[in-house]
Structures are given as C-alpha cells and as structure tokens.
Image (cartoon, rainbow, N blue to C red; front, side, top):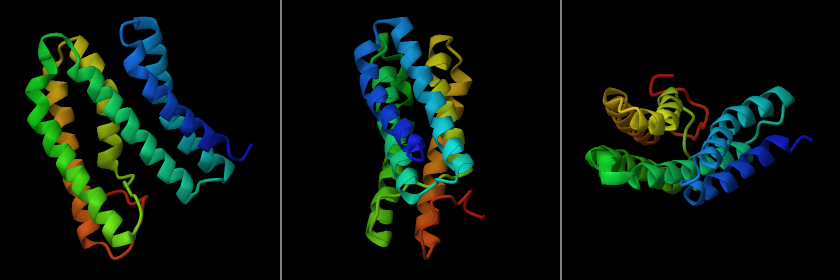
Length: 175
C-alpha cells in the first residue's frame, strides 16, 4: 500500500504513452487525458498524506511529467492545418532552457532533476488545459502558456546555476 503513489505515477507514464494511439477516439482520448491529469495531482498528494514521499517518487513524477508533456506536444502539433505551429519558437525556447537545466543538474548533482517550482506547476496546469484552449480557439491562453513555460524553464535553469545543492521541492528562485 505504501507504494501506491509510485504505482499511480508509473501508470501515468503508460497512459501518457497511449495518448497518441487514442487521439482519433474522443471519449477514449478524453478519459486517458483526464486520468493523466488527475493522477498527476493525486500521486504527490497521496504520498505526502501517507508519509511515503521520497526522492524516488519525485524522480518518477518528473519523468512522468516529461512523458506526458511529450505526448501532449505530439497531440498539439498533429492538429489539422498546423494550428499550433505558430507557437513552435516558444516551445523550442522552453525546451532548450529545460534541456539546459536538466543537463546542468545532471552534471552538477549527478542525477536527473526537475524542480517542483510554482512556475513549473503552473506550466503543467496550462499545458494540461492547452488542448482545450486550442479546441475552443482561446489564443490568449495559449500565448500565456508559452510565456509561463519559458519563464519557468529559465527560472529552473537559474536555480540550478545558483544553488549549491539539489532541492527538488524548491518553490522558486527566491524561496
């Protein structure tokens, strides 16, 4: 029972990997997509509640977030007429900054690390909502998601540059 949060996280990886295969089936896609989003919130909450939060769980959560992010990007960029392609420079900027942060953390701390900052949490929420924004043509929200993603990735890189030790649960650059 104490490993339940880790199993939820691992299931999110599997379900995220299935998203491209269910894109054409709206109900299946929506069900899998909602599971991924809800399980992302539930696993950490459950681990803290059960007193089983761990570095391994934080690592799995970050890895799961990356897999889900990749699946969502695949979904967004596969939309008809390339509607999402206008956001590509922002996605690339966030990706390059995020990649630099991951590489720096790997070199500096000798481990894979993505921080649980408020900016990263907001990016995750906006990314989760992005397909809805796209479907209902809410352009301002998509631009906001891109801006937040770039700023959160830059903040994380700055934290890795200025920190002496890894703190995955650091909330931001100044705290």
